Length: 228
Image (cartoon, rainbow, N blue to C red):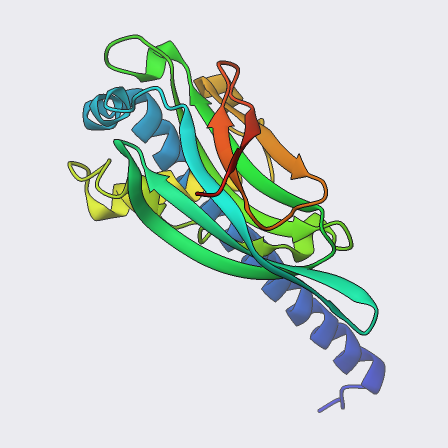
């Protein structure tokens, strides 16, 4: 019996690696296809989802922030702030509170705004979701920012919005919505548009409350009021 040479063994090993790689790629492609197919079906065929989106109402205030303290450490200024998200139906109801300490005094609040076209809503009127993504300072890259809501999960602000859908469908919907942060045009053919509203503040100071408002075009902007 002829012995297999080292070069032949190498070729066999390479062949096995290539086959495994092709199988992995095929599995990933199939998973992506079926996930996309599912979100397509949800957006175009699921009446319960359309009814749920119709329950969204126009919002004007979506939260606020205030400086808790500012201090200098090793020659650098640090700002500690509290971020508060308010309920959709009650501006006085705090549904999320988080504190962040950020180097500097300029802070970015990054919001993902997702608009649903009239064909996706049961009453034929456009609706929008406002999802808070992260907070980052002037000396940080956006990708290094601190998360506000957990990406991929149901935001606190919209808890119960999709309660009539199956749990699996709810997860599929929120995962697809959060993915728009990386690919805003992914669902544009289905009537879903993603835009950003970055509210930027300079020289944040204690004693001032920064109220987040939403414009008619979906942009986030701040209004400042003295802290009582």
